[in-house]
Length: 118
Image (cartoon, rainbow, N blue to C red; front, side, top):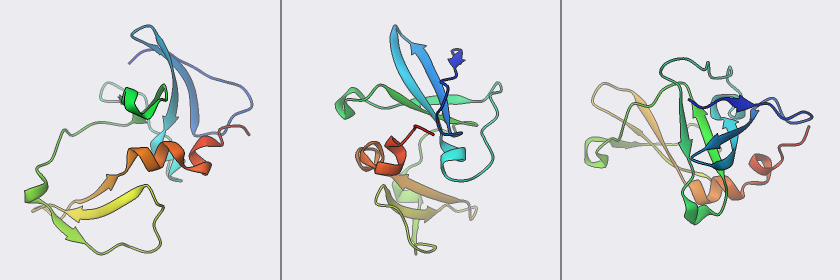
């Protein structure tokens, strides 16, 4: 995990900026953005970088990454209420764990996500 430099006068969920491979990236605490407790920056914390095709130097800070899931092993679930445009769907696995599929293009264009100023 590279050092994250806080930026004053921003939303609490905007953690700051980090130098990743020589590029300055904005870092959003995804849990805090969703209204949950901020993600702790521990050994398992990860920065999930947005691809260059999204034309943004950004990353989501997550508490841990569990890897990729085979979509064929997941069962679609009904939405648990109104959902933002960037949430493509909800699923559950064989253990009953719920998973959400993000539309990253929609997320990086979302007005709330872009409003980092406090």
